Image (cartoon, rainbow, N blue to C red; front, top):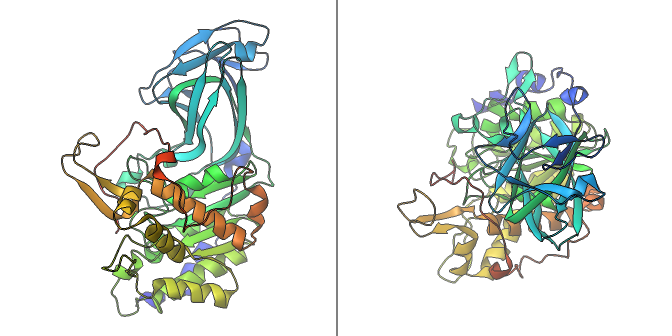
Length: 445
């Protein structure tokens, strides 16, 4: 019986002694890009520096750049690498949180850059500089490993095995009409850094390929340095399969007091039809387990109700397709005394505000041949495109504010209040596509 799945044997496994964090093995890097003289204390990176395991860093995945050198007194800003196409730069790093600082700009020309980490985690939206102007931005990013202990690992799905999120390096995607990268610094984040762990399904996971996206990969953009988002969600998972693949065990093994665990499930749980399944049985029981085990680690659990599907009825209103699962999540949050972000209610409001037809533009609805190899129309009413994912991430930010979580002090200053009933106009959205795309729908629905 499925209730035995949550017996003390499992709980004991979840809480067993974890290996020491890899943070002690972290390495710091200071890179000066371009063909000019390297700044003191920096490692020069020429445009020809292709990533190799032997070198441990370099331009990756067959992307390339060119170099410029304008000279001048400032060796760090006098030269740079540039491209009008996306390019990847990777650095071998052990598991942990890192502060990443980029310096962008060109002494004699304009630049335009967006920045993403690993599997398209948004760090920096379109940022432009005028000639002779430079910007420096710092982000805290998480590098994760599937290793839990010397004998236990996260049980990844086959298509996760090649995801950038799960390899042994940090990969940065520079994307824009003219990226001018002058410098990059990587240092281990302070021990005081707060980690926000995300658990969930395809509506939360870092979707690696265009045109799919989820709110979990957009939320890093909204935090200042000091908060790292560690997204352990995966497409097609329920609370039960998240547990069974040892993902909660992994999260708990690296969680420290003061960290957060956001929990959003329901889409796939409702497909489980066993005797003890359902919103008021296994779903409620497992949700309590996530909350209670997080508290035991000194962490802060946050329950997030499932995003609504794009399920409009004849009256132009969203019809609930998730049954009692959102209600069950609300009840567990209330009874356990933990924060609740009612994303189901907010996304319902969001879709209705956009409208039955226009809301397709927030989901993966694309005519055939929009993306390479896409011979048929895509019409998915569960999974979001980048615009939809970004709007939902804004809803999550409002939930953080409404619950007065300690994370509020880490929110970036350029965040005006967001009302789901007044979504951002699609015309104002800018997202240069990443080089990778797929027509394969994520697991789950």
